[in-house]
Length: 406
Image (tube, rainbow, N blue to C red; front, side, top):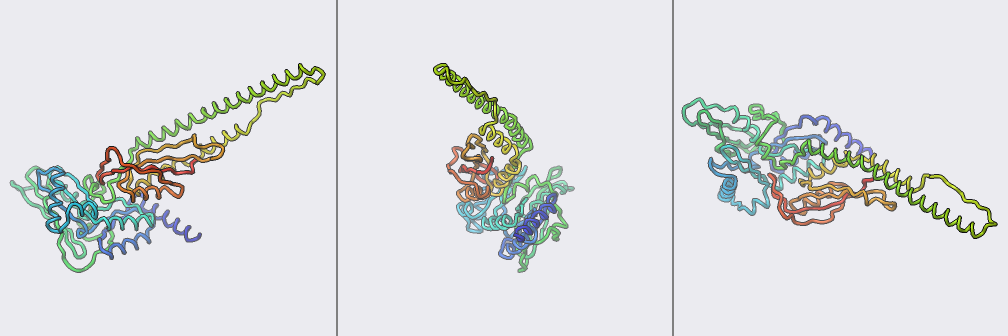
């Protein structure tokens, strides 16, 4: 019990400390790097972090000017197949791909799927929120490109090197007079045998090329995203809907109570008429008809208790849990339905029915498990029209229920 309390306090401390500014870490993709990151997660439970993956762990292809996104992707596949013997099927199965199209070029990056899943597992185990996981060079190069100027009368080539432990990432950018610079090449060279593990953001290259927190295209190279961020007006619309339900529910309850009282009154009148008919047939008996005023019935008490319980339920925390569960399982929420008619005298709780788009069975199971012990997977069926995002294609729809809402 005391260990659970200590861990909860550590998580709350980490969330408070890193709520506004996440910690930025440089991580290699080998066993030492994963072990070092796991140790960091143990020491900073509940924190937020940005992970910059070593250039040795990420494949990068920069398409020449003039190719569209599909052609750039095909070029990257051909390039990696030639140099690394990786065909497209192997890339789709064992690598996580991200692509960003810039005004002049298209950049395709790939990271081992096993590495990304291992980082996510370590983070999830210790309540670590991963704000961004991508190539270490991307945020720095984005800032660097914005600062380049062409003072010559012809096209010039700019070069930058980002040193890491044992590796060095080389960047080349071209620029014409009066135009913005654009990437032309990104490659990695081995410099020594020293392994690179988790390093804080104050590394040598970051001191030279500090990236801004705003990364318009670097954000799209996020291997654990890009996340589908809920617009503020969407939450406002949801809140308005809940307020409307809260306003209508008492009126519906009043109608139910009025109907129940009317039925009771009708029964009392029927009993009175029946008793009067019996009294007329037996005039010697005393004419005594008890009159009772309206009383608080068990049905009315049950309705009042149900209403109070539903209004007092922590809906905000429930919706936040559902949103976080979809976020951690990389699922796209499709619908949420609360069936209040399911709650009756035998069952005081209602079911929340959820639908989400998932990429595979494993994602569906992770999404359901993240909802808590009361969640249950109902069905999984193929979407009529696949949902495509920057993080991949969602071909399946999963339906689940979560019990416990009053």
